[in-house]
Amino acid sequence: MNFLKTMKALIAMAAILSASLANAGQTYAVMPDGEITFDVSITGITRVSFTNDRIRRVVHGDTDFEMTNDEATGDVFMRFVGINPRNETGYFVTERGITIGYTLLPKDEAVPPILITINGLEDQTAPQDDGGDFGASVGFSDDVAASMADIVRSVAAEYVLGREVPSGRDGRRIKSKKGEGWIAEVRIAVAGDDGRLVREQDFYMPGVLAIWIAQSQLAPNQRTWLIVVKGD
Image (cartoon, rainbow, N blue to C red; front, top):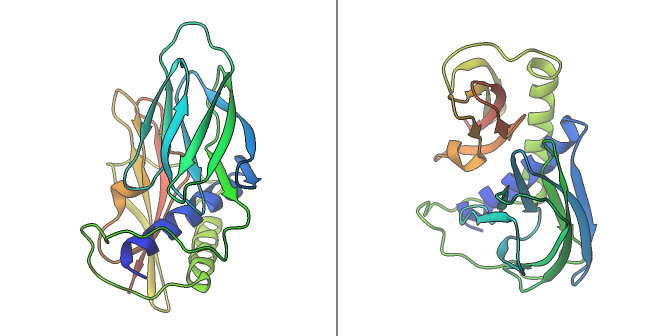
């Protein structure tokens, strides 16, 4: 399995872990051709992610939401651009060719990311890709993802959870912890005067194994925690 597939799997793992650590989230398990209903913010950006697939496109009728599909992760980001919020329906079509119906419920507040797992895909062949610009090939298994989750959870419990985010420049390293074959760096991300959407892919580079972001949508001049796990 190539390096890009490894990164996709770890992004999905980090997204699930993010919701778990924050004790908040919109997580769903659905069968192919199923339907879900979720909250979407009209005051900020809402992220929709599939943990074991990628969104290829969104099919909908008239909508008051601008929807951007991220090619690197397969996530969709929704931003309200209308005047009178209303419930909307549509379909997510994944790279495996699976269709999931949705109903979105506008909320006048920030909402957690929507994390969707499609049941019954464990024995199916994963979609292929060309490896993008990474090129390198490394081994990957469920044990690796589980190990990364344990590392991030441990580091977050030790240095992050329940602590105020310190001041400093964007990307400032606060702590480092070394383990067998890995180094975890606790950092901060800082928004400017216009706020910021903090994305996992912004911090990936060769050698990075996993990234956890405490809060992806930042208000102007707000700060949040990051954990970056690298191979040693």
